[in-house]
Length: 419
Ligand code: AMP
Image (cartoon, rainbow, N blue to C red):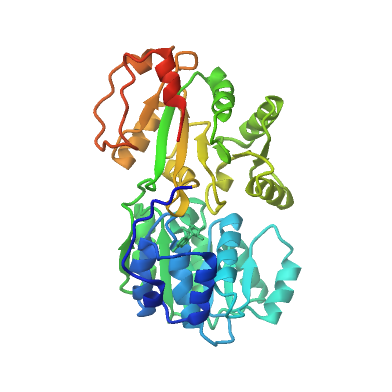
């Protein structure tokens, strides 16, 4: 995929003196730090608390792991705790920590629900240097007395907005009670609604604010399109779009688990290789679905919002919102699954009359998303395409609203060719 990351003058050598981490970075093929890494790492190295407003896909995991690994040094106790909202994100962060610390010979633990607690207790006895956990399972260990948090000197709250959305506030409070008061806290969130802001102010000590994109703006490099489509035509339109070149790894979001299962069967019936992932599926099945999607065995992964965060699969070319997301922040997070770390990607949203929701999303983005209307699928029988659209606030090759009036059906079809 095309790399569109802007070059920065800063090198990794300026951000850490920890040679084993630099070696791991070279092996990963990272050539230069991302903006959030450039901004956050020097501040974290000074020992300051951070509020990082950064989405997944910006390199934020490296931004908190690199200084934490450097700080850990030769300490032989559990010194870093990363709290994540979902199992998938926790597993992803733990994996990144293992890769970045592989020449340091550290032990990275993953304490997430859905996996046997006994094995975790046994591993905890053997000792970890870094633990990545979801709040529920961590509390379980705290209450059983199977984890000693007295040596934690770096606490990372990853995707704090999501944790509050998911109702983890009481668990976060309980974890904070169990941690040493003297510590460094790195607080990352894609968005800063009032509740998140208030939590940050209360638990952080004179934090430095680091913001790489404006709160809840969509990642650059993502081409966004909205298709107006009649509900009964959505599957046909999706099958039609999937028939096009370059749609290699496609993540399709549905609103409900049932909807995901139904769509999965419909796509299979249309001869499309696909799999499904949602909260009702066993952990084992979710892993299998992810692995099949990741290694290219299936082209399409149909998922509910359970997959929205923490999914970091290389090469997702397209994200499709089969149902318009209700919450504008969900839109931003969903489309963040493509266009990761500077790669380009395309995000498609199907709109079957949910104009108010689309307006909410556009208000949050600050610009209008390109609309595409094909007469045979259009919600309004093709008329929406012919109506002039208000001038987009932010115009440009990728984001500008395209007027589709006076286009022939052939020209409209041409518009469909994404990429
Ligand atoms: P994150 O926002 O932490 O989820 O990172 C998104 C993706 O970018 C992950 O696949 C990382 O491995 C990758 N990444 C992080 N930092 C860099 C970098 N400096 N250069 C290239 N890729 C990176």
